[in-house]
Image (tube, rainbow, N blue to C red; front, side, top):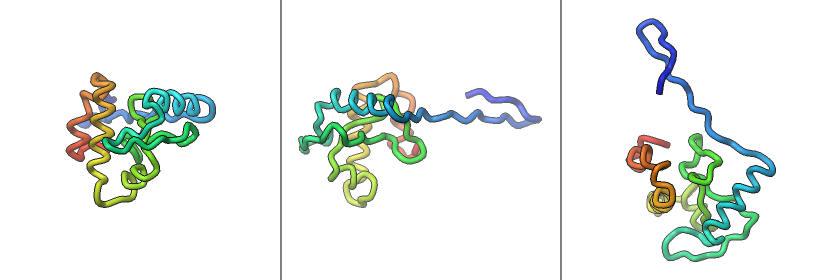
Amino acid sequence: MQGAKIGRCQRIQKIKNIRLKGKPLAQLNTDIHERDGHICIIRGCGRYVLPDVKFHHEPCGNSKEDRIERGCVVCDFHHDIRHHGKEGLEEIRQQCVEYLSNLYPEDWAEIKDRYLAGKET
């Protein structure tokens, strides 16, 4: 990243995350559900997820973005574990990242290893 020079220091430009609302967000949700077949992507699950259930962001939290490359369908059970669980949280995170990085390798190439190592949130 490039930023403006300030004396001896260089200011790093903040990257603004993509956040959608209204119809664009609803369309993204539809696109992700259709891509994933309305089925939880966690291996061995296979639960159907209703089309009006919002997709899961990966990464989640402050780094989440409303992009097809950063969203996947997970059932309520696995979504709850991913956000609030202690056991299984890391496994679900890793499966989401693996799934998305296999679909969008160029998009995930730069951040995948850092993210899984805990250096990206």
